[in-house]
Length: 452
Image (cartoon, rainbow, N blue to C red):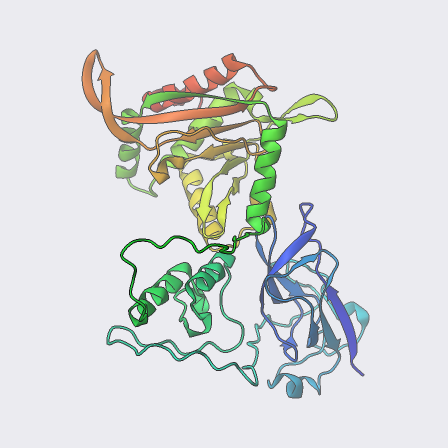
């Protein structure tokens, strides 16, 4: 006799209270194995695949894609112990629906109790298998597509859930009138990316029959105002920045530095062989050395205790732009890493961030943030502190500029550095000393050798 068990949205940690359903990975009637991912959700911290701790047949799902559910709300129900019924229900064969490989019906073996992908299970040897849902029994007839050109053939309609992760891609498709089921994704496993929607939009543009107006048309009277919900990553960023501005009396100081010698030193390191060293890693190494001299800036304020808490380790956050928005992954124990190790960790976390696979642990616990906004082609900024940290160093672009060097005017590689700091943890003298030390290391990398 099969028993129906309810699986609720688990506590994903870090104080998260809700999550938005991005994509269902299973349908009603599918067979699921213990710890198989069943739904992809977006929290304020990261995109997470949620595994089901039960093995059996999915009998119900709760919540639609795009809907936000609180922690503890039902996600789905699973019929456990229905081995004989499972193939007929799912259309598959050779997959046991029992909770464990041995077919035991003991409650202790019905689920692993795990809530996050990657934790594994010690009570089952069942392999994870993502079951593709069957095609809808009566799909809506798509609109007649434009005649294909010789350069591009129409993509075959996608069966089952549309392989789209990013809400931004869905929004772009709605704005441009693109049917995502007609788009062939270029990402992993057919994932539809922003560029795929843009290509589809360009391809269908010649089929439009209405002539383009000679001048931009004014918005019609009474046009609807677009409202974008502040939730997920965007909502978390809004909350954190608002709290930072509300609670932290910040101040900013900046300085221009001649980075010619630093860039020459990097070129010499990379010419010596071995893994290449990134510019960001060099600035990170300089930051950790500066924080060792000025520990006031590696701290946070405890308002309830009215204390400044100085932290012994440097967990360095760095700003990374992704399709989901701006995220700040954290490099743990950055003070104990070499430039080569920092380069590798920056590259790893950036790749994970762009794939939307950062975990809450990857995005929390930072003590100081390094923001390289120079990659956007700008020289300076006044960064907002990443609450509850006490400071952030901003690095502008490094470009050739006229500079007085050795008493003569020369063209040098110049960078603007800006430091925003919490005025409660230190005064301007400390902040200025920190920034001046960073600038000295940039201008004369040998200064850094004294602290290595």
